[in-house]
Length: 369
Image (tube, rainbow, N blue to C red):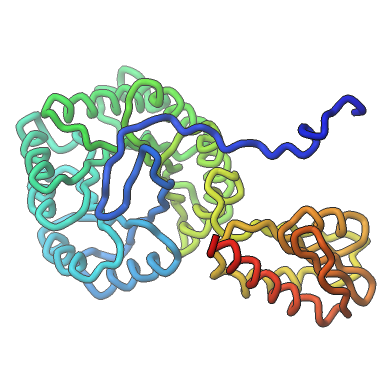
């Protein structure tokens, strides 16, 4: 330990270098290249129910989503989506399967189309979709799922990594043969290993941006764990340009977890990184209530700050000194730190209020540059 340099002791890992990709644009959202990694979701309402679909899109907008996907299953959905698009605060990706004519119709007003070229028919139909997208410079996302591979690939390669990659390459070539290159690609499985394996295998072979996701990931608990491992792991390897956390649950949770993965992986900090003690017998304060209150009061803060809320003297001062703003609780009182310096010594009941004031001030300072 004596040979560790000061530089190494204080080293913060650098952000991973992202694989260079072409850049596409979905509405006003850039994806790929040097664009920020975007977070998206999908409405679960029937798209022809305009009121319900807009209500869900607005929920996603206020939760911090960058774009949204809507299913188009019939003619009613086409008409409903046209009305939704007029009022949507987010760019809309139309989700099309099997009926290529639906893609031709929605291409007149949406911002992108998600298809699996292999399930909409022969090359003439694919060419028709491509021409419709070219007219308005719409990108196409090729969506490959392990559970719905074309029979030819499932039989020959199975529904694992090789089958998914071969399906993606085949579908990419179909679009390239039509002189179309505004493409994004997703390779989703319902488990971590196949998902990560497929993205890793395809990444060196193509130049297109990747949409990351673990499909059918389950309820909030399981989906959070699977997505944190798979998406966080890929992002740390420089793989991924946009993402969705698929949750059987509330729409807002998909965005919240997605943003947390970007934040806590260090790939794209935005908002607070809250450091707090685990519960243990050394606590000398009501730490759980304090952390809960701080989380509620600071959700609006977008400045990338490290904050510390520590409940005893063992690690409290050291952690607080290393953060932008921190609390070090002691018995009946404690200290508030800012930029490593003590700015207040107060009774326990006054600490959180002063901490929040310092945090608001620091966030404003950071955002102003």
